[in-house]
Length: 143
Image (cartoon, rainbow, N blue to C red):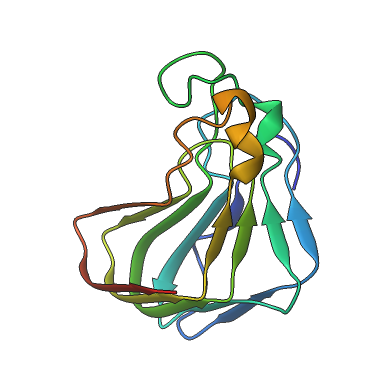
């Protein structure tokens, strides 16, 4: 995905299934993001076996996270999802906060792996927390 660009899946038709295969990467740009935006009703998002959404966070990591330094894009915006499922997604090296859930009703996330361990070196990958949830109902995160 080109730098400074959101992979915009916010206008999907009801009942759409999105399957990520292989490795998805984003170009470098200092901006607020998100890198990925998904919205809709009865949406299914799946990661195929071995697929990775790689934020290549080391390009942004400066040990400050969202508290200054480089402007870092948030990774995954799951807003306004209704009766939807996200499953089998692997996220590696997010620049900063990983999954923002807001305005959702009936969202189930299963088998999601978030690996920001490369940022542990010298504590560079600060604020790579997993989930921020607000103004949502019936959200289940399992595995």
